[in-house]
Amino acid sequence: MVADFNKLKQDLTHRMDGALETLRREFAGLRTGRASAALLEPVRVHAYGTEMPLSQVGTVNVPEPRMITVQVWDRALVGAVEKAIRDAGLGLNPSADGQLVRVPIPQLTEERRIELAKAAGRYAEGARVAVRAVRRDGMEQIKALEKKHEISEDNAKHWAEEIQKLTDQHIKRIDEMLAEKERDIRHV
Image 1 (cartoon, rainbow, N blue to C red):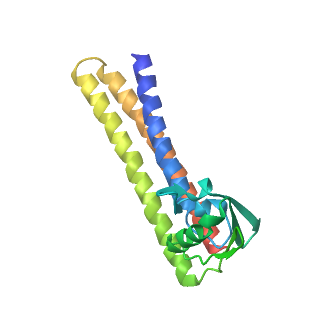
Image 2: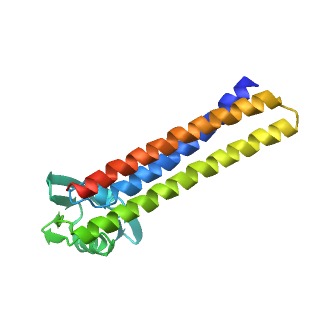
Image 3: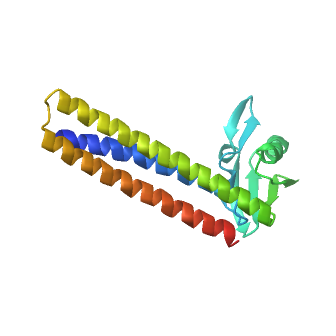
């Protein structure tokens, strides 16, 4: 039975880690006033008759703290890259210089900082909900095993405690990530 629990715990850990990874990506997309290549990760460019990630049509660099550049590989796509960045809802205004698209990162206003902090809080709450949903699935699996008499009541209680510890660790990590992101937003 111990092997079954290890497999269950490994599955639940993997799924909870997925919620943390999603949160990390969402936080990377929140503009803090510092240039970061991750800021352009969600940008999709209409190229060659399809939507493609920006990273598949050019090289993204951060040459200075308040500037991102995109070296577009195909000159014909420069306009599409510029439009995709402008339309991505990131509040950025790119400008093309040959095959290089420059994306200056403007200073954040206090109002924008508050909006970003609220968005970060929403993302963190979404991650907490996802982690709790994984915990609920694990608890239901334990109850089902106990009901089928595949595990004892004591084992079920022990497994439930372990899953709760795992959940608490992930929730704590989410809270730490949120606190770090809020510091980034405030101190730019």
